[in-house]
Length: 96
Image (tube, rainbow, N blue to C red):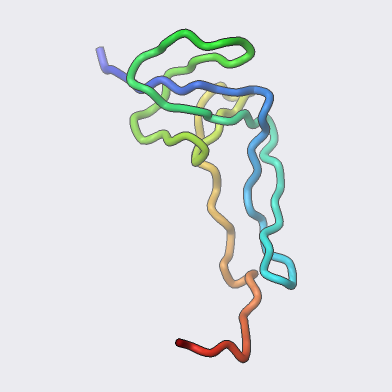
């Protein structure tokens, strides 16, 4: 039997991904459909309060870098920004 990590899922918190940047360089976020926050990853379960719940997950899952898909019932990495070229460039900056 393979030992897996355990993730605490908070279904009250939706997870967002960066889909681009505005003209001031601020990230633009979009909610990931059917997402729930991976609040913590542990080697073993311990008592938690509802509505939090435990799921088994891969060893590389990290809290707040992964999300739980409530339809597929598994954890996925939060997608990284699609393109850093969407981020505006700065002109006139001086290197120190």
